[in-house]
Amino acid sequence: MKKNIIEVNAVAKQFGEVRAVDGVDLAVQKGEIFGLIGHNGAGKSTLFKMMLGLLPVSDGEIRIHGQPIRGETFRQVRRNIGYLPENVVFYDNLTGLETLEFFADLKSVTKGRCAELLDKVGLSHAARRRVRGYSKGMRQRLGFAQAMLGKPAILFLDEPTSGLDPEGIREFYRILWEMREQGVTMILTSHILAEIQERVDRLAIMKMGKIQALGTVQSLREKIDLPLLIQIIMQPGTLDDLIAALTHLDLGEAEEENGTVQVSCPREKKMAVLSLLAELDGKVLDLVVREPSLEDVFLGYSG
Amino acid sequence: MLNIEWHQIWVIASKEFWDRIRNRWVLAVAAVFTAFALVIAYFGAAQQGAVGFHSIDVTIASLVSLVIYLIPLIALILGYDAIVGERERGSLDLLLSMPITRFELLLGKFCGLAGALAFSTLAGFGLVGLLLSYQVDTTALLHYAGFMFSAILMGMAFLSMAVAVSVVATDRTSASGIAIALWFFFVLVFDLLLLGALVVTGGKYGGDIFPYLLFLNPADIFRILNIFGMEGVKSLYGLATVFPKNLANPWLLGTVMVAWIVAPLGFASWRFK
Image (tube, rainbow over all chains, first blue to last red):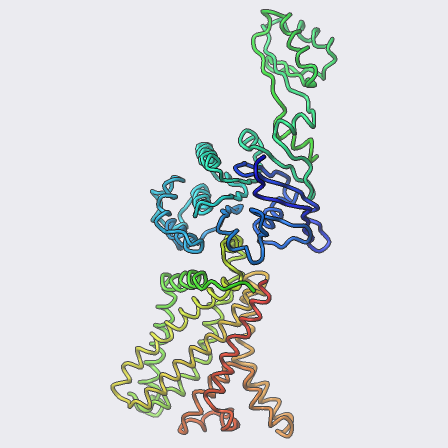
């Protein structure tokens, strides 16, 4: 069994009357990419800040590498952590390279590594330009480079891909996977569920300060048992045959648009639908079976 | 209490200091100080129908009257957004996620800003001091050096207050409001209140504690530090003449001034946690 790097035990956070985080238990393993999703105000950022030691917990305990994040060991723990805050803000008057060197200094990392990191995130061309002139995506890349300073064992990434173009997002995850190979543990939040569903090992869905669901995307899908979506394209003029056949199976209402029939189908009836379609040999042009998306799963859990 | 890592304080302080050098803040303030010092030293006696340098005592006395308004204002403006500015911009969380304590961040900010203020004060007034050194003797120069040094201490006391404001305030706007209010209180209102109290009571009550009340204002400490050493100008200042000689010890006044630097910072550090 793999070692738990981050352990969150019965953690709660109270802000006056509001219980922002309410009894969260979580364990993230070494080398895992862990996603944290939830609506705004679900408690993700508060939990994040408590894991980083930026906020004290009201109740419970958080351990990183088996050590408390606050108190005597905090410096040692912090040197092993990289953090990319949501909407990262830097100092406009510094250049990209100077920004990185400033944070390298605080983390006691050799400044020589900075240029290399800028190259890694594709910013070496703008290294000597002031951050003032950086686009949102460039700031995000700089933030990512900053988080990677000092080869941290754990990365906390809050909405890391916001502002990145599709190519940037792909490149970002490529670096993430490369780091996972080296045993780096990553925990990230995102509101673009489609983007993270193929890319995280496990995820937790938060709602009103509690963890509603926890597991791999597949296990969450199965647990909540959302129907599959089947899309069928028929030969012109054969639509009625299909509709007639489908009514025998007692599925949901079939919808037809531009010759494509769309029907939702409980997981256990999937094979029955497929064999029925096999009987319509020659009339079916194309077929797509869609698993419920993370969006559907998310809505199923968080309502 | 966690161990202090001086390196972290140094990193923050250097950044703050170089930021002020790069955005020409230091240059601008130094230029203002140089200009004022030159004008006062060489044209201060123009009303009497003469131009040119006269006496170091009169020059220092005039500079004190000017600096007592200017430096607290500059120091308060310099420091009021030290923390609240970072918080409002959204850069504070990232800074605090580094291996640095809040105390180190606060002290680093203060030291860097204090360095910028001290540097511009020394450069601005020092340049004029250099010109004066051709015309006055060593004692006079020491007086002038004492003036510069005490001006820096006063600046740091107000900077310390400003940093405390930047910790307590919820946003930059209210921080700037509080900073300006502090300036009004310590520079304009405080002495009037004391004088008013003296006049209303006919000087019968509280006459003994009156000099001690002056310790509650770093600007007054600065004034007494500079005026008391100079017999020629003492009489120009009403407040200074009521001040007992035994309390005018520069070491005592210096210690109180240092307390004015330490106390607001200590408060800020306690609140910042």
